[in-house]
Length: 198
Image (cartoon, rainbow, N blue to C red):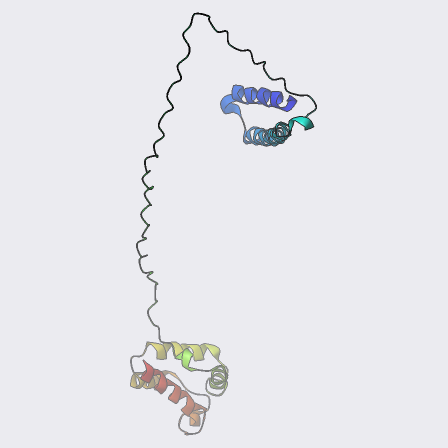
């Protein structure tokens, strides 16, 4: 009970402060209310427990009011028994209406952004071929190799790519471009397959 009195005091203090209360003040009050709530639940459990015990188990018997008969007047006519009411069957209760099933509308289809397909010759060149082309054709000049691939990507056809290659790229080993079983031929075959897939 002491906590309840303290709670009431703290509530009045909190109320008196009004808008000047801080979040900490309110949080402390909430914590205190939780403690008092737990105390009240425990107290209620004890009260229910003692009242639910049989009379023999209680420490003190609860006094029952004495039954005093009503005085009967001498000149009053005898009481007439009232007829017992006729019990009729209860009227049937209407069944509670069942709620309509909720039919959810189908969700709209999810539209996913599909970026436009970009063609890049790099997708046609494996890691081993990349280092082969760079070392044997471009003399390990990565910048020249990347510049050539960017230019090939911008071309619209195989013949346009060959024309650009003939004007701008000089392979390290000039004979490589003409031999059929060498790295140069493999590079041109890769360009050809790239344009045939577009």
